[in-house]
Length: 178
Image (cartoon, rainbow, N blue to C red):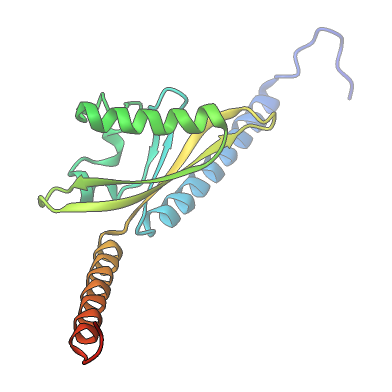
């Protein structure tokens, strides 16, 4: 059955079909978002996505454990908007800006005092996210708590220095070592 020129294809039946397709697409999108959120929330790392102005587009729910602030409170805000101190928010802004400017991933470390007052050391990886034309749209960041690893490395270095001093002291006490 053909349509006359100028006749709308959005008759009653087609509107119902379009509404049904839209409903199915929205449900599929919600299901995908749920799976994505579940995957990210099971990671021990903090996952954060920033827009080009440094505003939070996505924050994994485990941010609450570190900051005491629910993830949804970060959305649309910068670190400065969230009340971060000047040095803190400038460090974050400069790191995000470096990735946006160079188009290259970067890795750095920072310390942060959690809600229990414990100072934690984080490895922070940032990477540009590009659209189909290669333009950077956002920055994805992953923060991993490396406090225990850092402490173990520091203890190992300290132990190695003590061992070296002991070896030198024993060697100096041997007859004929001078």
